[in-house]
Image (cartoon, rainbow, N blue to C red; front, side, top):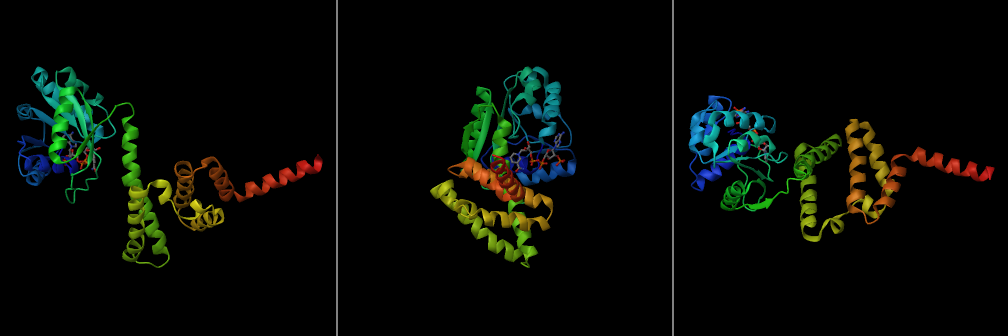
Length: 296
Ligand SMILES: NC(=O)c1ccc[n+]([C@@H]2O[C@H](COP(=O)([O-])OP(=O)(O)OC[C@H]3O[C@@H](n4cnc5c(N)ncnc54)[C@H](OP(=O)(O)O)[C@@H]3O)[C@@H](O)[C@H]2O)c1
């Protein structure tokens, strides 16, 4: 159910591994046909059909916002024919509660979320990729089997705070992209071409990732903040005032985040950042202290 970026990639991978692909349902026949072509197997459909009940395992790879409706429609379609079948969704942010209608109908429900980005342009290598899995024991068993066969690593999610688990992925993927694109545009504003900017920045980012992996976050931390050079940090923030306000806001927020997660004494670094980012406030504090001592 749903065969866009993730559905096509997982479908292709599972088909290559010998899984039998049943009906492939999307919102239109052209996209369903395209998905069947990409997967290399299956029957295209643009609406729910009873053919889905022929499968022992159903993967829901629709956008998060429709998973509950799709599950409700599936439950209505099959009633107690769902008894013993396994239904997994691929959302990282949602637990199994959107599949409740199917669980009530007797299905074993769970989720299988690849911690990987699927752009739709190519199928990423899934070897070594962590899949967060969740669900009833029989659903977990199927999820583990899929992950193992795809060469991934299954990690059982407690279900306690799945949205926070997923937010980690946003930091490591979408937010990294936003930060890199901001850096690119800053260099382009200095006359670099996009290609030159990418050439300048990517070795830096790659080395940082390598250092993070090899020597850990604190040892990998370089740059003015790590050296206690708050004057330079202040200069950076000031220079960003001529760009869209989000640039400077993000720089300040990321500096505070770095202080929180990277500095040995985060409280002290956060106080220094407050001064660097609000030099007038510092001036006022000094003035206040002087007045107080004059009165005293
Ligand atoms: N993209 C990623 O990097 C990534 C990574 C890990 C997990 N995920 C998760 O995987 C799920 C799918 O994400 P995606 O990026 O693959 O989405 P996507 O590319 O937008 O694909 C969504 C698919 O669902 C179909 N669909 C939408 N509404 C439907 C409905 N009511 N009934 C049946 N099919 C429907 C769409 O059909 P049409 O093609 O006809 O519109 C499309 O085939 C989400 O839960 C997402 O959080 C995504």
